[in-house]
Image (cartoon, rainbow over all chains, first blue to last red; front, side, top):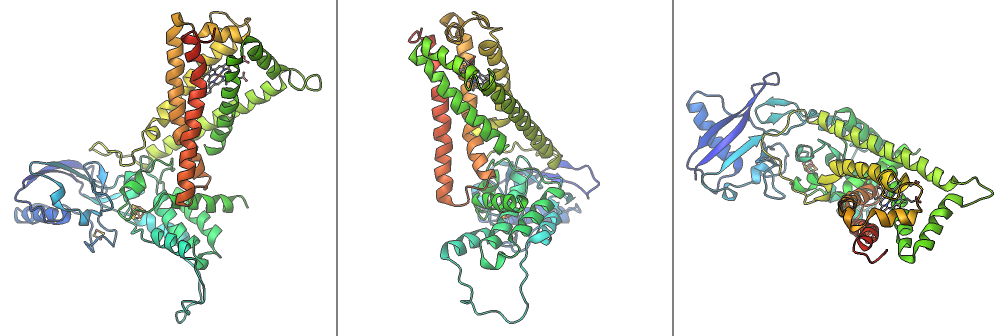
Length: 246
Length: 212
Ligand code: HEM
Ligand code: SF4
Ligand code: FES
């Protein structure tokens, strides 16, 4: 199939940036979205042009590096799918596809579709850890964890930190990411000692990074490639309120 | 947002129940309006309950609007560059997208409504008539547009509460597990629906002449 791409090109953080239109021909429906961009980039390189910069690493939906807003939807319209796992069979010949970077003040554009997501790292640094004595691994059965808690914690822990939740949120809020990280620790026994200080520190860091405030629109979980449940935000709010009321 | 909104919802429940007294006749309704002004007397001065309610309402409405404006301003700051492609909503929540302009419509409604029912300025019977007469006169068929405005405003109130109520449960951290979440979702829909039906029943019945 033949496609028209409208891609955001921005040569560095101080460049103003603009949408540029490209034609890509003979795209196979079996290609992934990133492979389709590879085809475009190989051509651009042969023609002596600057290839479109985009982030990617694992290309199997687990690292969270890839991410772009495709036709106005973070990671494209396919549910529970990262951009690298999105296949061209979901598009048809003649389609015009708009491709933009995550838009958030806290995620400045580095180049083209690549944004700097270090704000997420700083949120994790603020409290996304547990303090345990180092040494050999403890006996797995020494701390029992109820099955329901283990499952909910595990669901939250599948967040890959891609940032789609921020990109999709009308408020540019990072609540789903932060809530996933808070929940996965706060439901487990190992996370209890720092539970309240963690919620407080991570929420405060999230606000300090310049993300917007959550108004519970639910756009985040709808685009999240890992289906992080909305319940995590309630868990974050509960932990934060408990910490703040002391 | 959640706390001030919850206070406003409590007021709406009381107000809706009070309005239903219109179906019990003029005496019952006027007596109720009178009771609102004289409750606690002579131990308390007249209008104690009303004055307290009015102060709490004004404080809540102002704080509620202040919170909404700060959230909107934070959102604008958090995304200085807009998307070129129209962002398609992926979370089918119609009510969610009406919150900001819906809130503005409700405020405009409340202003008109106070001029109509409380001060009587825009009411055909004026401020000196009994509350019952004001209400009946307000919704006569030749003033169908007033009733229509009330109905549209109540639809907005319903949408506002449908999202607002469940959003408040979420903000207060109550919806942590799927089962509780779906129960509270249903509660939000049910409370909004009952409030809207309760509120629209009086204007509709007056408009079609069932209550005279
Ligand atoms: C169809 C729906 C409604 C009807 C028929 C209605 C009717 C009335 C009436 C008759 C009064 C005057 C009572 C008296 O003088 O004792 C009143 C007062 C008032 N109403 Fe409504 N109302 C409706 C919906 C609403 C809604 C949705 C709101 C808020 C969003 C609201 C806010 C108020 C306020 C703030 C007052 C003044 C209370 C006070 O003076 O303390 N009303 N309403
Ligand atoms: S919550 Fe979902 S959308 Fe947000 S960063 Fe984690 S995986 Fe990505
Ligand atoms: S490249 Fe790793 S998740 Fe897409």
